[in-house]
Image 1 (cartoon, rainbow over the protein chains, first blue to last red):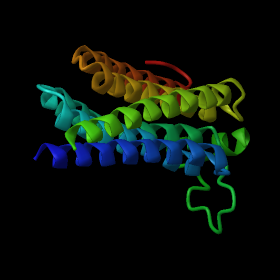
Image 2: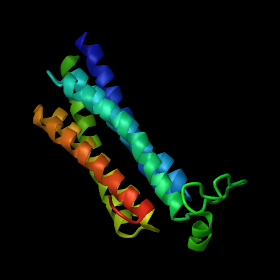
Image 3: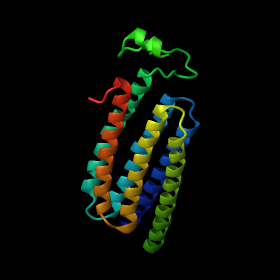
Image 4: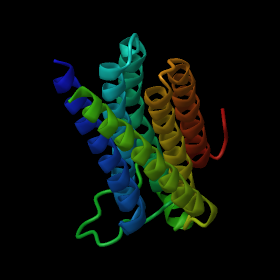
Length: 118
Length: 95
């Protein structure tokens, strides 16, 4: 039984590190703010959550903290990404390599103001 | 068998710690020289998340639960600061 828990923990640690590396690599390689935002969400959700699951499996009396942190990360990650994307759209950053831009006219602010900022 | 798997787990934990510290250094360079303000905001959010991951690794390496308390506070502070900066960029005012 302990062997199985150890093997699962090792797999979780390695996959968490893998997702962190993938997230930072995407943050450096992607051409645009919005696609980079898609990549950096992987570090907060998958990297941290897999390592927290490994901690909850291995250590004694940590599963309460681990569950609270997993819930908080799963709630706060999409909220942070949405707010940053909204800020990027409101200061007029363009999407690169897009076939069609549905958000060309900004909804939240005055359209004349948006045109002036670009 | 158990001792062997524990050795492999220790090696994996230290390797993961080293990789995360290297990633923090690389992202800190991007925080210094970013393209625009949103890039720097994303870099600071990413550094907060990587610090949280390092705290979780410290829990597993040193077998002390106090690191998870620090990680909980760090996650809350990073979330609130990122939301506040993004709303400031959007609305040009804080409150």
